[in-house]
Amino acid sequence: ASLKDYLFYEEPGVTLYCGDCREVLPLVESVEAIITDPVWPNATPELQGSDDPLALFSEAAKLFPMLCRRLVVQLGCDSDPRFLGGVPGELPFFRVCWLEYVRPHYKGRLLYTGDIAYVFGEPPPARAGRTVLPGRIIQRLNKFRAETKEHPAPRQFEHVRWLVGWYCDESVLDPFCGTGTTLAAAKDAGISAIGIEIESKYCEIAVKRLRQE
Image 1 (tube, helix red, strand yellow):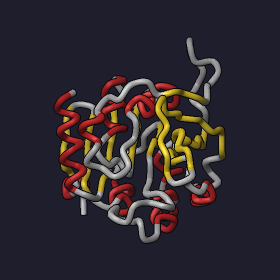
Image 2 (image 1 turned 90 degrees about the vertical axis):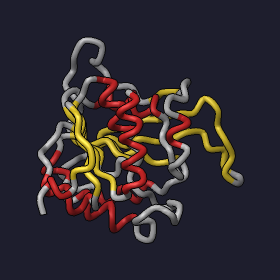
Image 3 (image 1 turned 120 degrees about the horizontal axis):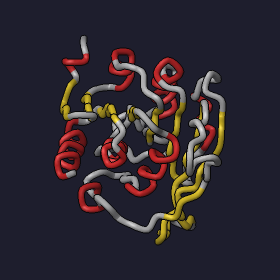
Image 4 (image 1 turned 135 degrees about the vertical axis):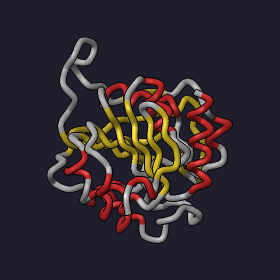
């Protein structure tokens, strides 16, 4: 198979592939950073890979050191961080980032206050306005809220845009891109982006969002 077999959408600076990331990743070019929200330990059953998310992530993560200098993995505050044991040692842990919601909600007895991003690999080089790297953002906006209702685990655009802005300068890859939040954030920031998503229905939503941009 070649990348053309998986190509779903392309525009200047943005490419989206539809397929299993474990098959597509060996074919794509390297990027500066991978920023992703993989199928997580307690994922909803309707997501492909939810039957064994650790195996899925571990198999994909084996390829990450050959593809990027930096990895950012976003998980919910109720996801077991031991899941990240699948990250290869070639990408050493750097820091945790707290992605807080302006309006928390309840999940049983849990007050769901936001997501957590785990950063691995080389920190981005220092530049004006980025000599130190922060670890906290409180979401204020709900950009793309209507479009992401069709996914069982939508990410806040503002959180992802913040991660892209602080941890990426040139190019980003999201191997579990869902409805394209990382792609939209990268496009908004003027950074080239590659997305991989296994379900065509989510690829279609991602394309709609990108075209609206």
